Image (cartoon, rainbow, N blue to C red; front, side, top):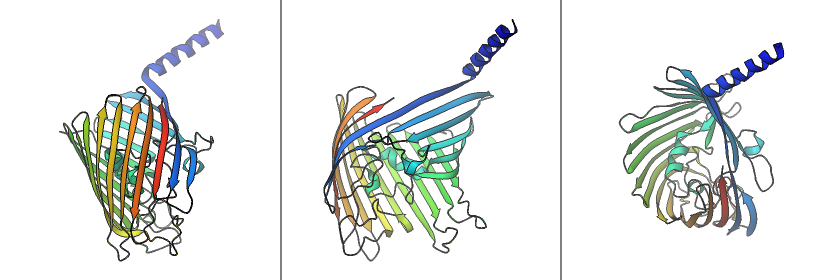
Length: 354
């Protein structure tokens, strides 16, 4: 009798918990045939995470009453071609945070995306993936990293079309609270078909052993005009300071006698369009990188592609991009998770979302 009552009590407890909270399992499996050329050698490979990084995630919320909820998200990145962990082998290298959501906004703590990255990814016609990725030339990753460790983020509710994000990432260097510190912010306006975003990111380059190296600063203004089947995309960014605009591949991929010099003063312009046609979408973008230093290592990227939806969760894609480097610039055509090895890239792939 006691065992029966105990089992009933456990069942009632589980039912109450499930009524108050929920957990969602989700993910993406992305695979593509990739051909990279224009570098030291032409490469053809089958690789993971080209249009979007392959991932497995868990997210949930618990209603705490009074309009407050506890939330969490744990997102693992993996390589579906080999089964290896992504993001340098981190278990939850894509995102890992916990926080509280209230009527006055949401506060989260952990490994999170920078507002700068989110602003650019939202306006990129290629969704921050494939060979047409804005990361090839734009410092959308906020000084070399799209995510911040040790981050505290506040996301406001929407007020008359306006919303904001603020984030602080602790450098955690003993005796020097500024070393490695990161700060970011964004302001968004959504007014019908037009969405505008202004985002900025600041990162101190000092470490425990390297001092007085200054800071990297990135600012971007983005615009998206959604006319239904046609969308116009635009962005203008300013990058200033050491490590503010690092090329994605620093291993001298073009065989220059002197390795390319990362710009410490540059601006970037993005123009793009997406056109829906039935179950497919045509994609195109142009990016101009203007290096204002004495090296004058400018670059231009031209990208075009097509995405066909077999269903709401599965699509096929084909994308080609070409970068024209100037004066020894070393920018490469990569994808959502890879930096690339040459100035030309072709992707033919499939993505499934679950």
